[in-house]
Image 1 (cartoon, each protein chain N blue to C red):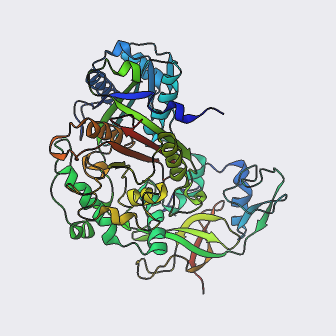
Image 2 (cartoon, helix red, strand yellow):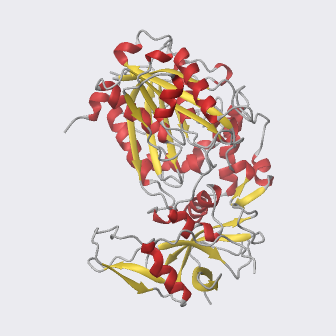
Length: 138
Length: 386
């Protein structure tokens, strides 16, 4: 099947556990063992205390819609999802934010509110890549 | 510790200009846009290209390439590239270099074939945008700056009508600038009814995409007296960076980089955010300038949009803002930051004709790089204030 969006590329070594977790239906986040800070995107030191002793935790998949946009066109050549579609920044219950899409919602500013509760939906793109999308919490 | 106040007034802007033309220029490479702007700005200063010994630029071409193309061997170069405000930040770097005698005549140059793509290298995604933004459809500034905008609307109740007023005010200035690309009158309704691109932005909320060059020439105050035009004193400079990836911005409605850059510039100049009689703000989107005013402390949080009401920022108003017509209506080649410096210098020299704001003595220039990620602030004046 033709992909309607670009695959994450290049997957970097420090982010591989994140992408590996998604394939198994788990949303994994890096956590600092020294100060317990949970952060995202993955990197080799804690951006709060700068310790380098890190681990991964499984996130609850729950969060809030921090901000959103409704796109009426494609913005990259590899994107063929039919507009309108919802671009989203989600703040996870564990603290970090990530960029994603809000799905299973009417793409209308009247139907979407900042801080509305959302939950993860795992969307399998290929054998290797599953994306974390979000939908309104039920 | 060294006192940055010692640098205040030590360096002047002595030459400013655009490339021969700006707009849609499929017949000119971006290197040509650089060279035209440099030649014009050096001439504006009453200097020769052979006088230039400090080369500053940002973007795809290095200062080494510009030196080579100009046929000079600069003894000071700076290619700081942190987004569109890089040129504003480089004014601060040039002040330090000139003050300490590391060079005598500095040129800061911008050239970008942003619309026509002539002589442009292909852009490459970084590993972070490629992994964490592109797979969800993000691509280009409108898909990111809108996040800042919807969050501001949620927290402060800012409305689409209020953002539209920024476009209307800016267009009123563009109508008075013969170099502006868009000069037909628009209303708030026109903005609200223009083509939807990505909510909350319609096309009239988003800057132009043009081909343009611009350059600024600086020298020490003692040397500036021999230049062709009245010197514009650099009284304060400030810079900062907060983030690159938008998810890392601490508060989407408030730019920490802008606050820090402004504080540094105001302290060095010995002024407060309320002292300005002319303001130039980087306007890639209608929501940018109000949030910058809030982050700089010129406006209270959530109240920046009120500065763009009729009779305030508009021609004849109490606090003229973006008097060249801005990135929204005059020109926006991609890295817009050189143009607000050029306009502030022209306003302080009093050479702006129909769009000249009355009695401009103290001008604030503030620009962003990326999504309010980096910031550069300047305090410029036609008098030393001492």
